[in-house]
Length: 236
Length: 212
Ligand code: B1M
Image (cartoon, rainbow over all chains, first blue to last red; front, side):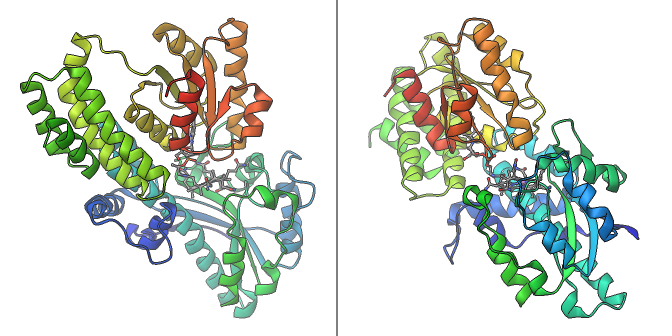
């Protein structure tokens, strides 16, 4: 099944904590009051300009290895092949908040409205990430509707550029998914436009399906260290 | 309060209207444009930069101050040009070819300007030759390159090679940065330096040029 999913901008709007987390404002620390008006403007602009859309297409387990292999540049040992082997359902996906937000960010910097420009960038980044989660929920609902037990329909997104899956893997993913249908393009350097876009594979399974020990050689250089949080989220 | 102190204080608060006002006031009092720049605007930005480096304030607060600095510079710029006031140095910056992401590079530019550098921003998706042409034309001493992905950062090597081919690698230094870039990668491609973030980019560029 191949499905285009559109979200109202308000649904893709990320929680404020996520945007603050990107600023290093964590653990209950609050936003300085003088920045509040700029953050409110950034959220307002996001809701006005964003056109969030995603594409999800089911993938047969047998198709995954060839896509994942990409151009042979993945780390020698990675967690995803084993996770996929344990999966109850797979789908490729791509999503974007659209290009109007990105254009506005550029204009704000040109107009020297750097605070709102920077915060709108952060809101759009967090929103793009949120789209992965919204599509994961959507796919989970679909698995359950198709008869999969809810305990086996816990879905997490996995993306090229993370956990040893090289960014050049985007080429095979794009060749199979063709997200140009929703306006996402890949340039020769494997960069997606609009910039605030995400891609990957949605993997459905039990909480244990997603479990791995983050002690691969590439884990040492990881800048996000999100895996613990993600694994904890599917346990809930 | 001395007008320069008021100016620096308004800048630290990120109050652009007050910065514009105090800049005009200082000009009206006959203060030299270079002094207004150095003792008012750049002094204020210096404090803000230090507060950011020592984690006392967050990046959006630095940007509020930067916006206020631009308000002051808009008033002061014609006088700085008239008096040929020298800046700390000229830096050409841009996002490497194939890369369309420029928020990190913009932040580096803002911080460098706030530290007193003249910044020539070439934008994004910049071909290697363009970095070198622009630096040679402007007489810049540093080229700063930014990248978002491992697949785009490889283009940085071509800039270093182009400088080498044109025999200007000694005079024009290179500094690289961006999420996937590391000090090790900088060494591998022969770049002169690497900066982890926009604040350290200022420190590293100053070190490259031997300025305080
Ligand atoms: C000249 O001298 C200098 C000196 C310093 C310099 C400099 C130049 N240039 C920059 N700096 C430095 O100073 C700046 C200010 O302090 C900093 O600039 P930055 O531009 O890095 O910082 C910005 C101001 C804020 N930071 C950011 O915006 C990037 C933060 C992280 C978490 C990130 C985000 C937010 C996003 N991403 Co993604 N993203 C990551 C990032 C991981 C991380 N922690 O850095 C990174 C960059 N992303 C990555 C990936 C893989 C991807 N992302 C993607 C998508 C996204 C979002 C849309 C969700 C979002 C926004 C992207 C954007 N930047 O617009 C995809 C690609 C998007 C595309 N258009 O092609 C996708 C490919 C994932 C996918 N398949 O969907 C990784 C790249 C890995 C690699 N091998 O290249 C990544 C390092 C995360 C990871 N795996 O650890 C410094 O780097």
